[in-house]
Amino acid sequence: MTREEIIEAIKDIIHTIAPDEDLSNLNTSERLRDQIELDSMDFLDIVMELRKRYGVQIPEEEYKELATLDGCVAYLGPKLAGKSLKVGV
Amino acid sequence: MSTPRYDAIVLGAGFSGLAAGIRLAQFDRKVVVLERHALVGGLNSYYKRAGRRFDTGLHALTNVALRSEKATPLARLLRQLRIDRDVLELREQSFSEIVFPSARLEFGNGFTRLSESVERAFPAERDRFARLVADVRAFDPFAPDLADRSSRVELRERGLDPILADMLLCAACWYGSAEVDDVDWRDFVVLFRSIFLEGFARPAGGVKTLLDVLVKRYRELGGELRTKSGVQRILRDERGARAVVLDDGTVLESDCILSSAGLAETLALAGGTLDERAAPRLSFFETSWITREPQRAVGHEATITFFSRADRFRYGPPRSGELVSLENGVVCCTDNYASDAPPDEGLLRITVPANPRAWFQLDEDAYVAAKARCSDTIAAAAAAIVPDPRPRAVFTDAFTPRTIRKYTGHVDGAVYGSPAKRRDGRTGIENLFVIGTDQGLVGIVGTMLSGVLMANQHALAARSA
Image (cartoon, rainbow over all chains, first blue to last red; front, side, top):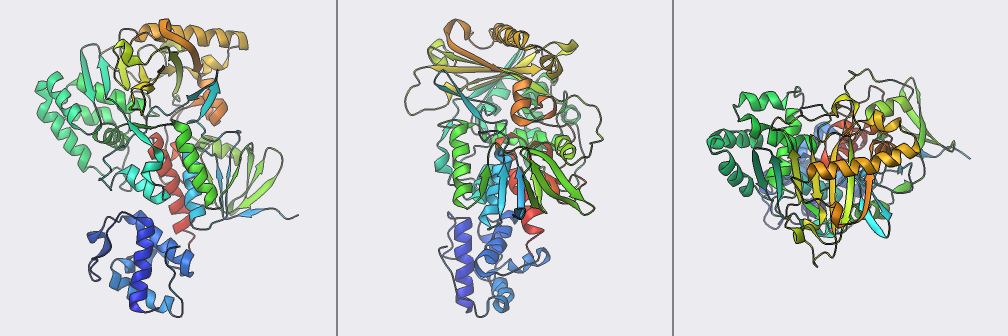
């Protein structure tokens, strides 16, 4: 997956979890929870959706890597290599 | 045939069990929710008599904050379950009240009505009350490793007028304390926020609407629900819990069992015992009167009325082994929730403390007679506070600690479970966790959150690799 696709994958997951959040102007280097209403329970859901959709396993101590969209790209890039984007599932 | 194996087994299709089931099914875990009864709901369920549907448990859905507030427990819960708030068809309360001999407080959804009411009834308490509210807002009741603290002591240390303190305690205890005459401070904080800072609503169709939404969501996600499937035993080996045995002998295996049966009850199923202080468990007696006209026709507009017939509120079982206590209680007038069409009849429920052992030892005839007699005495005792429903009644029904024990399996028909909570859900047996009341979160929203949090922690996060 490309950088843009990873960002889209994450945004689509956030949209599933929190359909009322506006995701159109997210800054990729700023913490997600500072921009939209996301708590630790929601982060667990992001992890669970990544596992469900893409078979990606993320240990609890590495959840923090997903704090920003740039962090997601860096951390998930290798794990999502060769996988294709699934949105609206 | 090999023994069926699950990623998780949930005991009890009450609110905590269904919520846990939804979380697990949402992430494709193979999960089964087992329910002893034909109907789901457990303590909070419904039944039909004389063509009418009666709710048990649920008076109100608490934590009904403004839709725009996203960090509240109800909003977080619905998000975790991916349920749209609109499908609950929430109807807000008119207002509610706390009535003591020498003072009366009113509160509504949102905080203004209570703060104005406190200012009128206790003008000298204005600053102390404001400080209490600020403390309640600032305290994090979910912080790990909090010690148990008495709310009575906390309120006394803040110098609050003892009657005002008891009035606040009355509402908090009645909506969620398993302890005699007190409530843990973190629970008080949760209850204060959910009752006074947020508020009450009721799904248009009562508890059934809510249960239908949960069951539908769970089934759509592929979750398996087995009713009439009581668990007689939990099997374990040296590594912990391994399987459950149903009443019909069927064995289901799993390395993760979430039980809403209560802590002592769950340990008993696993062949263990609970070493707990012999504190009494609190159970209630409740009568519902269907009245010819809604309560507002006779001038009663409050939705929930917490009352104490003495200024010193004492929360606990009846003194001297009586069947019921007339010292304090809660009245719920369902017809005072907002509705689309004016209700053509009314429903008034009065709930008071009961002594479970006294109810258990009655034979059938004496039991039926005692239900009628106690309904009569509680209506008479509450008549100074709410209009007497008896002259207007077209139908009356009551439930007792015996009914509660039958539908929940809880020792002594305990409504809020054991006074000893397990906040981390751990039972001391590997792979076996408690959810619901004995985990420690109270109220309908709290108990659903308990199912969600324990499923997240013990079944999803811990086993995601």
